[in-house]
Image: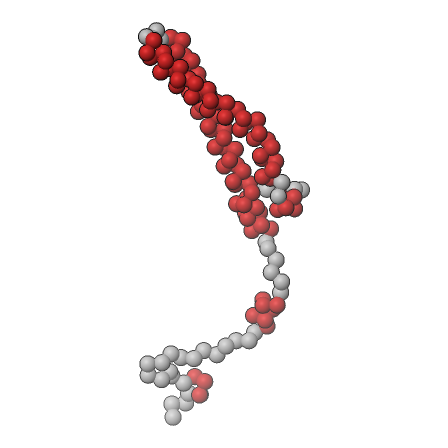
Length: 135
């Protein structure tokens, strides 16, 4: 005999050693305790589900408005300085009409932006964390 106990015997050829399973109290307590979300995890979830999309929406809307405002100023400057023939004036007026329509859409979005943000931020998750700062 090699002096090994039956629990510490080498594995059979081609087999894997068997490990003894621990039934420690720590494993038992982990399974029975209720799962509580950590505060940082719930803040990040709140940031991903509510704050992030709202911030993206506001940023995109404001960037579109700034772009269209810049285009409108360029168009007005170009039309005031240039002396054009009747053919090009018609094309310029059509482009200005399209730009004006886009600017009106942007104005409507800006007018309703406050209501949209309030609506998106008025969720149960935000109401739960209304008193707590989100950093």
